[in-house]
Length: 409
Image 1 (tube, helix red, strand yellow):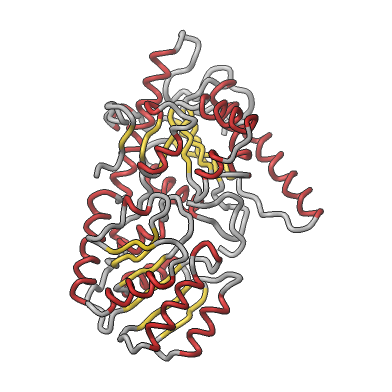
Image 2 (cartoon, helix red, strand yellow):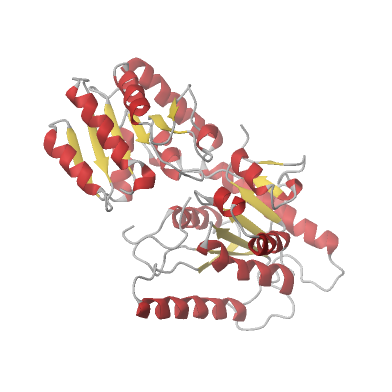
C-alpha cells in the first residue's frame, strides 16, 4: 500500500521541495513534556519533531495534562489548560497548524486550537485523529455534540486518518475529499531482528490494563506452558493488572516478567522476539504493533481499528477481542512452527521498510503541508501572509507512568 491515500486523486502529492525550510509549522497536542510519561500521540509528536525539524521551522505546544484525581488537582489542571491556551493566543502565527487529537476530553481540549487557527487566524489546519474509540465518540454523540464535531472538522484544511477503517469512520463528519490517510510510522533502522530464536520467543509489551488484553495473554501462556509447548515468554509493561504477569512468571520457569522497560530495552526485546502478541480490545493504529513488525516478529492481535491494515495471514493472525480460546490456539500453532513464524517475521519487517518507515511518512506530511498552503494561497484574497513569513497582523511576541490525557494512538 502507499503511505498516503485520500478520498480523491490529489492526495498530498505536491513535491516536498514546494515547502521552504522557513515554513513555520506549529504542532499542537499532548507531547507530554510536563508529565512523567507520554502515550502514543506523545511518541508520535517526538518522532515528528525529530524528522521534521531540519525540513521546516517546527515548534510544539504541549496540551498534555494529568488526569485529575482530587478536587485540588482539577483546579491545577484547569490552570495549566488556561495558561497553555493563553500562550497559544499570544504567540506568533505560524504558516501551518498541525493539531493531534483523540476522542472524548482530548477532542474538546484540541477544538479551540483548531477553531482559532482555522477561523480567526485563517491558517491551514491539519487535524490528525488518533484514539482507540473515536468511532464510538462519533457514533454515540448527541445532536449538539455532533454539530460541534462538524464545526471543528469544517475549520480544518485536511483531516488525517490512520487507516482506511478510520477514514470510513471520519466520513460521517468530514467530506471524503478532505480526509487523508497517513499511517503511523517507525524507524526500522532502530531495530535489529533475530528471527531464528530457539526456542521461539513470545513477547508482550504494553500497558497492563484490561483494554490491552493482558489477562487474556497470561491465560493463554499459562495453558500453553501447561500443555508442554516449547517456547519462552517475556512480559513487559506495568499497570493495575500486573499481578497476573507476576503470578504467571512465578508459576513457569520459561516466563519472565520484567516490568516497565526503557525504549532501548523495548527495542532489544522486540528484536529478540519471534511472536508479538497484543489481544487489544480497541486501537487506532498501534505504534506498538509497528515496532514489533520492525523487530521482525510475527504478530498475533485482534481485528479492531486499523490493525487489519497491517496484520494479515502473511505476517501473523487476528483473533476476536476477548477470545481466549482462539488466542491460545493461534499462539500454539505459530509457536509450534518456527519456520513459518520466522517467515512471517521477515514479511513484517519488509512491510515496515516499504510502507511504514518514518522517512517516507515525513515526505508525505510535507506534501500535505504543501497542498494545504497552496489551497490557502489559491483561496486568499491577498490579505494573508506568504509562506514562511509567520503572518501579518500577529498579536504577541515571537516565538509512561501516568499517561497524558488523550495520549493514545
